[in-house]
Image (cartoon, rainbow, N blue to C red; front, side, top):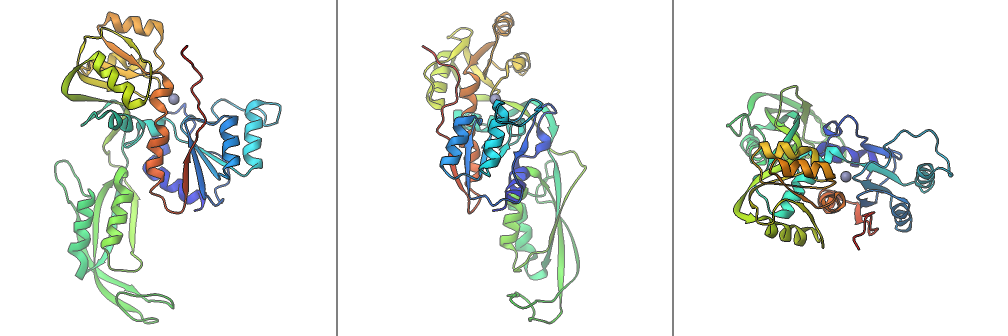
Length: 365
Ligand SMILES: [Zn+2]
């Protein structure tokens, strides 16, 4: 698959505009025209990861942490970052980073963390943006109008407030001429055909756009389906960083920590607060979320699970009676590989491999 086409699929689900302004996401190194057969996924790319990619004949590395973040003045082999960029280009390996856009997006890192932990019905902790809405219009012969409309509705399209399956339908005449090699559902090769068609229009949030189009095409009888997709200015569903959820059953902090250790495959965990604290509502911010302690408290959360908590932030949390589970930046984000693999595995004709390079810079002795 062309890198450009692959990126379209990724950004349809995880748009770059969800990322914070200070972030640096998207294709950071590479040629959009390159053919991608093998992808290596990793939390970040250092020299070992790049060597791993070279050994495995990888065409694209996908990272969570932006490979290029600070300003670069030169790209040469004496400079560390310059050497790595040079190595990537020399070996024709592209590099794509998806960072805060992946943290924020639906089915991104925070949602995946909630899923791994079994925390259901989560809400957004810090709303940063409103999701993009699209209008989808498809032209269908009258014989298949109901079938296609049903497929759109079942895919989740047409939600306006508390109303589902909302569409607008207008009839008209569709025309086409099947050319050589066509296999037309209606009409003959070389002859202009006129068909009574209905134009079905509906509204689709970005997160289910691809799924909706796939289902619509499947339900449509034509070999080549005529449809339009356009972005709307309407405000869509909110998106944001961090999640919070009420637990089905109350648990104490000690048991919650044991559960986290098992689910995230960790040996040690750092906490701020009392092990007997009763936990009914949890907040999660993958990576570094200690600046969201008060926000989590304001949502009546009993604990925030995050990483990178500093001494004074921990003291402040104690003072306000808030509990923190500090899993460390690495351990809340290493699940990136599983989260993005699940998405990329659905794309045909590309092989996805997870990096085996251990990247946590800290050791506990
Ligand atoms: Zn991070």
